[in-house]
Image 1 (cartoon, one colour):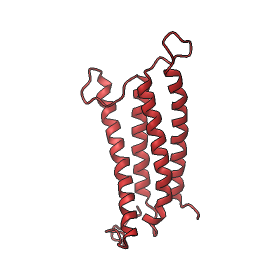
Image 2 (cartoon, one colour; image 1 turned 60 degrees about the vertical axis):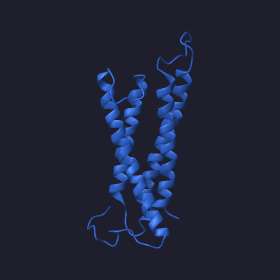
Image 3 (cartoon, rainbow, N blue to C red; image 1 turned 180 degrees about the vertical axis):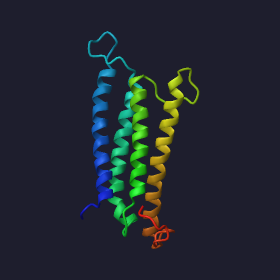
Image 4 (cartoon, helix red, strand yellow; image 1 turned 90 degrees about the horizontal axis):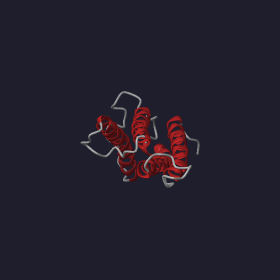
Amino acid sequence: MELRPSARALVRLAVVLLVVGAGAGVWQLFAAQPPHSPFQAGVLEAPVAQLRRTAITYGLVLVVGAWLLPWAWPDREPRRLVWTVHAGVVLTMGALLYGASQSFMGLQITDLRTDAQVVFGVRMLGQALSIACLLVLAYRVVLRRAGREAPGSAGETGGSE
């Protein structure tokens, strides 16, 4: 089966995320060293581990999502969905990368550091965008499996999604 452009874009993003996850794994190794070690990275290990876990999880989920795209949209390309997934992943990974480099998780709604609230907001926006798109994909796959067509898929939207 040949991958369409939208599925190829998701696979490319998944590969990038898996490489980021592998790099974060190496970074985590250095962050876990004791403070007196010459190999200590100078950041806390937990935010780096969070970056690694999130990148690998998103990467694996996007590979599955790329595989499911032809069943969810057999007649057209879901370009808007793919762009929104990319935007959500970039926002999430950017917030996690910044948080890991500054040794904070980006989960605190209120924090004394001025940039913590911005990182929290960017991270939550990115996760909301990407997860919403993946839920739309899952919803359309379930509807097709049930033999029903998704609302608006018979050309009612007028645009190329």
